[in-house]
Image (spheres, rainbow, N blue to C red):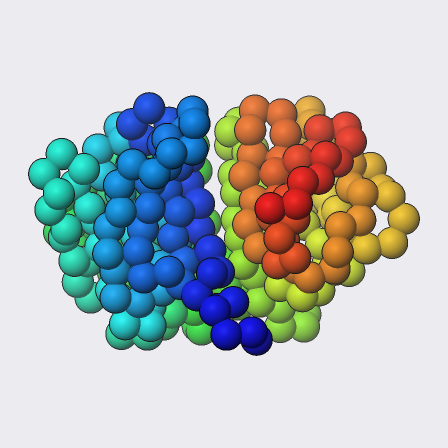
Length: 274
């Protein structure tokens, strides 16, 4: 890798918060917020290591950061400038991160496979082992009553019952990087690392692949269109480097790839170079 290239890598972007501000973090040893209108820098927060994930809370008052390599996960209060360290997270760091829909809890999935729930003020509420290896991504169900994690497989955690389940996604070990619920709560999509033949998988609410609500979107080979419940998702093959993150809108699905390209899926695929 060319000197300086590592420091330029951005691992996470989130667009929400006050005035729809954009937060960016990665290997730059800082978190930067930009105006959602003119993209002018607004705030810079110094950090000691790598920022692996960033999330605004639903009210835009708190910024949560997952980190590793010299930095620990924390919550930053935009009103006071106070930084609250999230205790009990693996010393090797964390990547999974997500606020509950009402902002009551912050979920962190760490590199030892533990799911940690924190209250808004950063106080640890629960810590449960979910994945036998590591949690690389997570997402709350829109109803806020449970969430799904990905890593070496798929984990589910029910908040009220305080119960967890885990299952491998395939027969062969596959590192999963991303998970995104559809806003209707009936299905979610996952993205894998470095296996274009696996592509994006769509799962029904139970986490089991069924039809017609679920399917597979290959990221290599001929263009393929599939029906996913009331949605139609069609794939035009991007570079086969693995799907690193994804986000649903009401009808569309957006993906980002390690080759610095992103795609939006809504009947046809629109791609942009980052």
